[in-house]
Length: 378
Image (cartoon, rainbow, N blue to C red; front, side):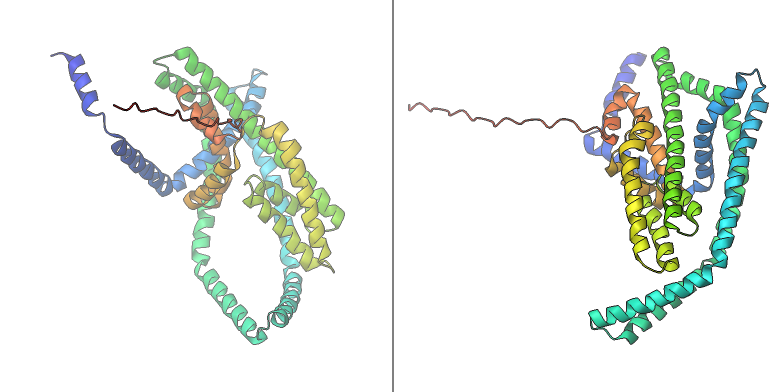
């Protein structure tokens, strides 16, 4: 039997038309998304662990340069990371305690402000204040009922979060320990055609991803410092906590920035004697965003990986629909990793260009001149 002819016949039979190929691709994409959603309890901590392992890999290499055992180097790196996270957690816990103690005062001030707003709205729009009060009471009752119904789900989520906190360090340790094995596996799988090219792609991709994620961390630290300094100058309560939260939310483009500025503005309205402080907070955050977008991001982050705004918003919304709030934080780093891989594989470079932020020069379209056709009379 001539196997070459059989192979050619199979390939010819499997040469589906375009609509059939599109249908197969869409079905495969739907199945992939379904698997990612169903297995999110396993995949989300694993993705977090992979990203943190990429960040911590240079620290492990630093300890390995001193001829330290690999296991000990990884353990020391993990312990230092846990100490830093525990310190931040203790700080947030103390700030949360202060916030809970002053919560009744904030509620009273918000109530006064709400009553003033209702009085103004009823006079300006000629609406009966009783109707507005009835709507507010109804909305408040619905929120209370929804909160009571979601207590059980919240406890389940907290329990799942505790389990994930214990799983992620284990995942990080395993990924860092078996990193040479994982890289060699990738080389052996994709190195059948051109081993040197595959080795170069793996090395460059790992380096660019590390630089991108480290740049993202440095950007978050700088933005947190600027936010906290501005809020401290304005005398806003919980300035450092709000500044750090704003820097973390800044990782989520556009949407995160809006939420980040809304929180200190609300605190300013509730704690200050005049609402002008909320305007000052808005101006300060706007200036910080200008500095971040024009100086910090181009130097530290965007110089490594450029992602356009369209796909940034799309993946943030998709990440929220797929994995919730963790998906929103993971969406941008994952898209950056995908773009880096696309940029280093020849057949996928057009897709990497599509995800990027490099605008091509506009082509000057010359007008088409139609030639006149002369018909000869017969």
